[in-house]
Image 1 (tube, helix red, strand yellow):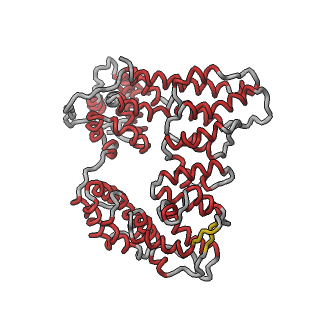
Image 2: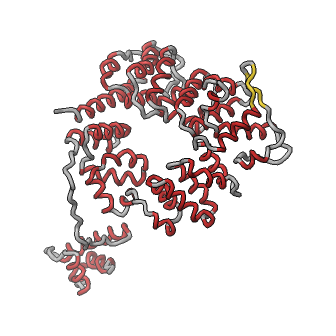
Image 3: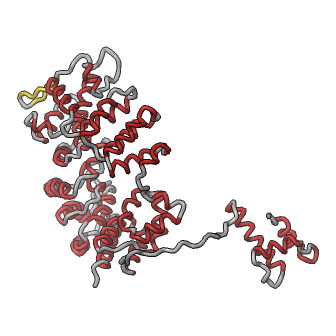
Length: 508
């Protein structure tokens, strides 16, 4: 009951002029406020609670259910107090980018997250799915028990695949269920999707079809071939890309035949023989015409682009005898060179071909005017490069380059985007040009503030054992050097913290 007006009257007039009503006395009992010496004190405290409830918009419920009890099946080793202190510093925002490394160290030590950090971490995972993927392996039995106890955290739990729920599951949950079932049994997932395909919402079919990418195999080919004839364009495109990823599929063989009729390599050049009209068999195999007759050269080139971006890039080596670098160079000679390189980029990502991903990254480094790396797929390719490839191509490139990197340089993006650790050679190759630059005194070309990002990347990815070398070789006596003193000190502080953090897992 709302007693706001009564409480205000009591406090303004006092109990002499406004005696307490029976309802107000009962209200004080409910709030356990009868212990106050003066009724005005009880009224004041009750008014404070009323104001809080009004601002919150609801009364705080009283928990009446039995409190769940946890019983661990086996003892789990939690991290040390020092390691937990480092984690708290990360969660407080002082060293936020150190969390993945901290979790990696925790797992390497075969330990689980400290119990006091679990609520804050699970709460953050609701807004940040990438954080959930980071901490999930380190939750331990206690964390997995805790998640279902909270109505928000329970959403993080991975549902147990239940094929019987297929008929009643809708929306995004249907796709999640399909993926889970495909992980357990690809054949069962395909059978369920086929059983309801004709009744599925046409707007959701493309998303559901992508679920077959889990456990994709030759058994899916017949169904996907039929999906090439669907009315909706997005369904046909998904079907074509999935078919292209099945080794030895009929679609790949047909694409090779189409390309052999359209591409001829002579005298170190590629010559294109584009059809004037899109062949009917191309249409049936998922190539979209992209307009109406008469088709322009750009439209006709787009047909070929669709074939190239789906074909496994390794076929340029086996069928055309071209190395990855040769193929990239030849395609880049075309009038719309960035489009052709982009098609090869899409293919390297679609088929997860590391040889071609390395070749493309190397080509972009050697061709600084190229812009195809700045597309969404180009950036994604560079972001996921393995550490070994990163070291292999960047170290020699940077060691031969004595001057600073530009803000929009592909190497700048690679260094700031990677999650991989840097070797000592790579770290020094990045920072030494900046050291020389700052030691040179005043310089009119001082607009290099993107190096703040590079110093941050260096701080979180270098070997902390380099601290002494990085700390002692800065010359910041010049005015230019003093401008950068705060950034350098911030970098060194992060390296020191990481060294301390690593030590907490190896003591004793």
